[in-house]
Length: 154
Image 1 (cartoon, rainbow, N blue to C red):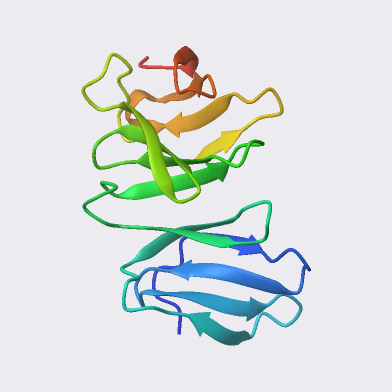
Image 2: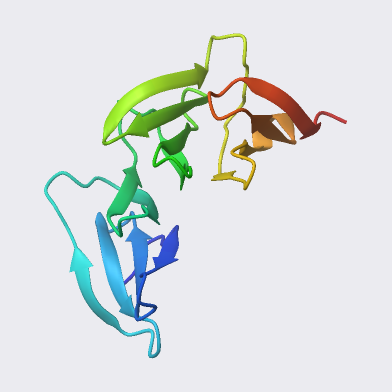
């Protein structure tokens, strides 16, 4: 039933798991107690949904492979409601507010990343991303300005 499940999140009420199922182009809804699939979220617009997150209002956001985002891999919401997304294909970070892109860093800019993957925002509003292409964790300001990295090439 699942084909290459990639990411999941627990619903705010703790009763359901929402599972990105890119091989089937859906988000599966799974009972958290029994792990039985009880439904799916599908759309003609979904193409290989990859990551799922919930914003602070309980809205589901789905990162999916697309040319516009150059293979989004990870997503996280900051305390101010902005959503940060990594783009593996173009080695960049994109920031959205209310569903609209507001900024981007990386790629050919002074901040160089190589395949940034998963991302999170800490309690000091720093954006922290796993960057396997550089064997490092990249730490950025909330405005995506490079702060420092942990690790790096041997």
